[in-house]
Length: 291
Length: 293
Image 1 (tube, rainbow over the protein chains, first blue to last red):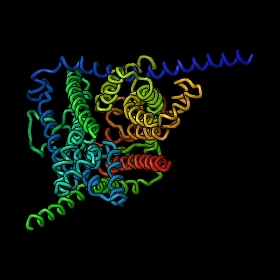
Image 2: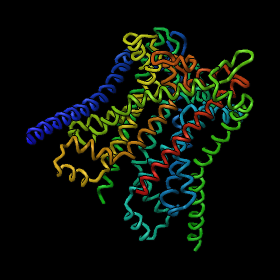
Image 3: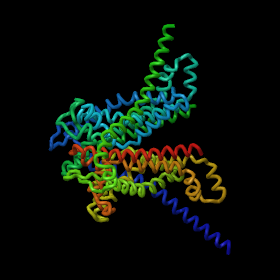
Image 4: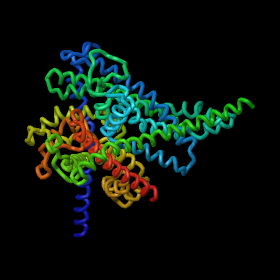
């Protein structure tokens, strides 16, 4: 009798195990399925609508051209990186190479970086609107957008750079210092170049974040669109993601088609960003294995 | 001699630059808190704390206006709860799949897919929700589609990558001896994973859930496109009815608000910020606790 029970029990346990196994497989497949669904949905309806006029034409209610938005997006990426990358990398250098262990300042800085990473875009948007648009008088402009976004991407750059610098083997530093290099020389000639793939992957993630940003920019750089591109920092001009939002919320059939086209461009950018970070992370991983 | 002194100066100078750069984040956080509070708190004072937080009547353009955001607070909680109900089970199971069951060949597809999911901008999720999820909900569940359910579905998808990657790495961090012990006692692989490994990884899993909550509470653009954004009296909030959250309250009205109305929207941002601070505190408590163990 006992034996029969045990056998029944075992069969039940095996059945539950099988169900669990099927469950995890299902969830794994579902995750990939959702991604493929979203990608195909946007790309299949978006790519056919991408044409030269949309990419490089002048904006009017017929073309709904994204040219000016594309140029502003690039401008914003470039200048925000010029501002945020040095600050972020220097911060990472301080945290990893200079700060003493258990230093109070380090705790505060880490807490600040974690907090920045958790603040929602819309709160950045409000802050940018209060400080840059109103108090500093930049108005709704690309400049206000750049200032806001530069703060937003700091935590990404800091944490990737910190990870990368930490993974540089101590041997490298000892070798350099032993050969008579200064601490600063070691940092800039040995540590930072070795950590470069990791730093770059942070930079690329930051690019992805800027390209996709909407909520932080809607009240800082604004939703205005110009007929043709401008590099004027004080102009109010939307980015690509906001272009998509505005087209989508207009709700007309033609604007919806163009929203799909803009979405397709955004997805292609995200795809490239991901590809590049994976490649770079792989290179850094190999470096770690050399030890 | 000269060059040594120069390099000594460079060293000190750059060290100061590094330190100042590190302080930039602190300054940014302080500035964000400060400016939000300066603009938001007087509005709360003028409206009255109780009338702002615990009143569900939001009629900023009426005379006299009323500025109660209780309905939005509840709205944020609803859609976040919905997102967790959808995203956590699927995400956790997917994390378990990646960490324990996935053959290497399949891993090479699923892992990049999860990373890609994390990189897709909110606006794309929102647009997808508007074009696919909303019509689907309208057709099969009723209502006009712009609803708590649609917002929860989209947010549930959006928090998946957060849940998956952090849970996966915490499951992977469980020592192999746990598994050996359990398997050695005759448990099946599935029993070992679900009864030994997952419970052992609970602090990492909890971290992933809190980060997911943070993402869902703070998400704006994806929600604004699928939630309908009508202010609902609290007792009329339903799964298939429209909803307005804290974030969407800000984004739908800021463009035409002025005076106290504008300040009350910034105050809405302050409330959102307080939520995020609470979540961050919870995170650091968990971190501290798991370090102590």
